[in-house]
Image (cartoon, rainbow, N blue to C red; front, side):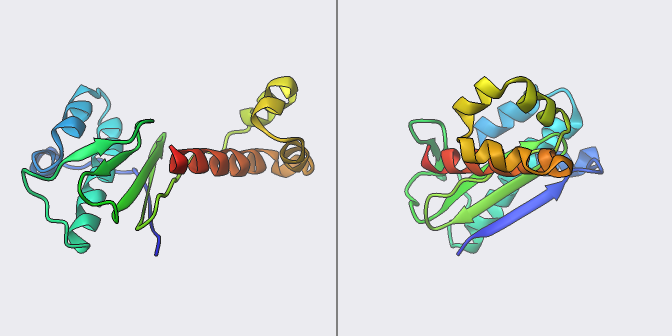
Length: 165
């Protein structure tokens, strides 16, 4: 079974609420959060970690000092000793996506931007290295949907790569 969370970060937490959660997350994530200047960027890192702890708890993986996060060869995170608990995180601008499964999983989220269309048109040689000819034809086929189709193909590829590491 796959569980997927998506959230837009619209309102900032009160500082007290933020402080109450910063102390229960991994030291690695805590250090990344502390380095961020913008509050939204701090939350883009905090929320996925809280969701991971929530889902782990639901699966009987209790958070404690011995809960150890690791990284696969290409940087994909996992909880050591729990191969049945797989997850992946993505964030963009002010939104996050976190996916959970008992098997390897990848997720990607992107803000749909009209400049993707211009990039694709101006860089067809580069796009042919990133996208197959069929994918380029699919993206360009509907003028009013090119940005949406670009994001659809891009996020699909990105999620696949993140799944495989």
